[in-house]
Image (cartoon, rainbow, N blue to C red):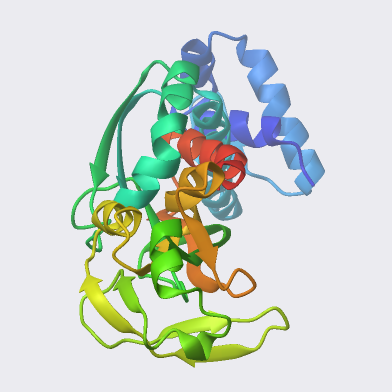
Length: 298
């Protein structure tokens, strides 16, 4: 592989129309510039320019070499800029979208740490359970939980971990209605579900990996974890809620797990963001920060 130095001096000479003009622009002796070009010609074993006291003419092969050398040097400059860009301090505005429950249970304690580590970043957090159109709405990073995450046009996906949901109830409700011993015993119980319609069965995964579709009778369906948590704490029935939402309640024993050997896969926690090419330092820092801290929170 040929060193870039000779190609650099050759393209500068061509760009400035001769050795004298290029030497003045580069502030180096004309003789030094001429030696560099002559050395490149010797290495390539071709004549790149025809020299005389009055004329500077690029040969046909010289024009072809110039075209490739200029492109190669431009790519080299771009590579150096990319390195400098990556090393730059994260700063500026960062727009992040996140589901409500994830923002409340995991991001809330992490964001102060991130902003303390990167004080030049200004964070705009959009908390919503609707599906955010990352490109159309100008979002830099969107956190999502999907059962089967799929690629999206123009976006890159980075997976963090699998999340689970639990069936939980208050001790008062179980004392009154009894605790089901099998998924088939859920049907007579009052239930609370994170859904948009009645009648959707719970898909449970057992200790041996077996899957069961369990029918239940919802007393309340609501697309909000805060409302459901309040309802199950009030003893209205058995609820399906993410582990992160009820972790503190389980530790305090204000809620207990129902069918503790059975889980409901909530989905895969991941982020989506525009192409890695030209990724802003603030975006890269935020994604790396989440990859390091978020799984431990969950």
